[in-house]
Structure formats: C-alpha cells, structure tokens
Image (tube, rainbow, N blue to C red; front, top):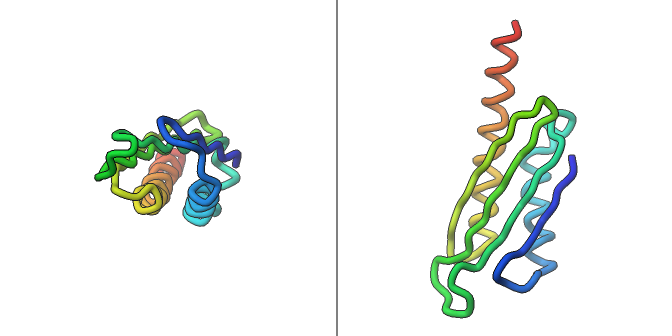
Length: 104
C-alpha cells in the first residue's frame, strides 16, 4: 500500500504529512493487500486569510482497478483528514463486501 501525500497552495508541513500517513494507515491497514495506492492532497483554499479552507482529498486505488475518491474541508487539515480516513475505511469495507457477495 503506497501512500503519497502532496501539498498544494500551502507549504509542506511534516507534522501534517505524518498525521495524514498515520490516519490513513490506521484506517485502511487491514485492507493493505487489496489497495495498490493512496493519494492524499492537502490544499489551503484561502491562503493566509484563514477560515474553513483546508481542503483535503483522498484517492484509493485498489488492486482490482477500482478507484474511490473522497473530499472534505475544515478549518484544520487534521480534522478533515481524520474524517476522510474514517469514511474511506467504511467505503472500502463496503466496496470489498459487495464485490465478495457478487463473486459468491
């Protein structure tokens, strides 16, 4: 499970990158054998102005070729990432469960 984290319209922040990697790993580690890559993009929509403008997106590419895209915005990137990781775990679990039912 390859995890790529990138920052757009804001300076790279090692603490946020570490948090993102940890949140995604904790949420999706049990599916690691079926996930090819995860891309996390963190963007500050308003620059230095502040506000609810930390936009985070998460893309999960499975080994079967399925792609899952999620987005969230909050005043802190960590809050948005935490929600995204939880949603990603639920959606990935449901996606694999549906695929298993179809194959049975």
